[in-house]
Image (tube, rainbow, N blue to C red; front, side, top):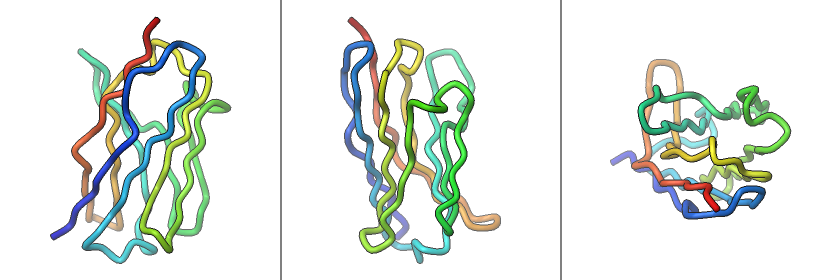
Length: 115
């Protein structure tokens, strides 16, 4: 019954912004760390940003200063604000909830950065 539902993906021009959102159900959301991953064509899935249950954040070097991860526990949501987007940000973005050995994934949402 665990479900992560993502939204906000789409096509954006270089330099533009996009906000991804992930809504979780079926878990005690406040206990889980929440991550955003992405997988570009022909590449391995990579961790983009993470936020702990306590609100501490970390970012991949490639997105640091451009992306912001946030969570609203009252809404069971985690967002990824993406600014100054580059073509190399093009990927399928996945929401992940994890607690100990438990890990759940969203379906992924396509982000395409192209002129």
